[in-house]
Figure 1 (cartoon, helix red, strand yellow):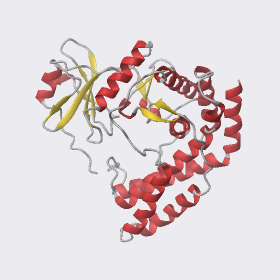
Figure 2 (tube, rainbow, N blue to C red):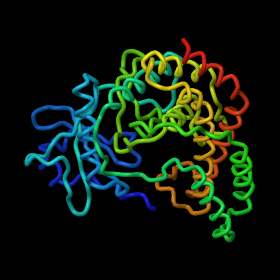
Figure 3 (cartoon, one colour):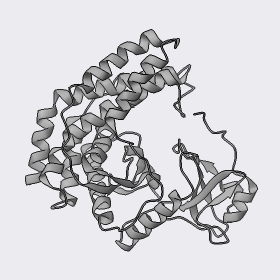
Figure 4 (cartoon, rainbow, N blue to C red):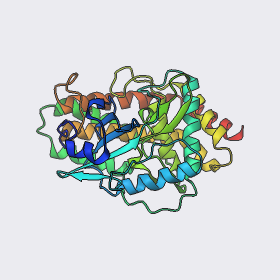
Length: 350
């Protein structure tokens, strides 16, 4: 999959939403969906996105349903802004565009304190509770997004199919470490699927500018149903790593985990079952190893769509670094897994 060409929004798109070209400012985030901050002609602060081909147009119907439900519950959330003719999205020149209201605040690439982790846990729990009674059939589906055995099979297949890769001798030992680590993963219990965000990494939360308060979740293309341990596992592997996921200094921070779990428990009291709670630490380890397997397979397949050209000579090199980062993080999680299980149990009983 190649990177989409970084074109400036065409005039037809700006006109359809009555946007001011001179106000366009490219956002640093928005890797999958290139994003611009922009103002409307009447001065409203908005967000313009070129939607990735990974998503169908109907994903916007899902976003509308979820955000309308959140707003009825009194939760802060971005809302889709219709075109001049009342459409929720615009298809122009075989490209999908949309506009959302802008939530004033800041995105973070990493948490800086337990206070921020507690706030992140609290706002995600509020999101989960708010959408728990949403009766809706999602149009856009991501089958097998956290099917760990399938991702491991993909890695094994890549090792066979890409033996001639120029970096195979460097990648094969990483793959062996991933597969050995995966073989020792504790089994996750079968629990009910709940409506979740689907990609609750730290950069998908908005924080207030003047405090550690978390305001809301953004990038709602991935809202779907899955086990809560997978959702929170994905969150915690991101929130509790103060370094970038491809950094050699990747590590798992216990105080951040304890604070995040405590914040979630405060806002989710009585919401989850004990079985769901007890699976969260294992879910965190599972998702971390799953990501290592995905990155390692992509190091051979070179299909990653957003590698950093300023730091790496190829997508393979970037994905090797990401694999090593996730393996380092997984080792850190495994080393303290009993303590994480104790902290999670105490949060449930508090």
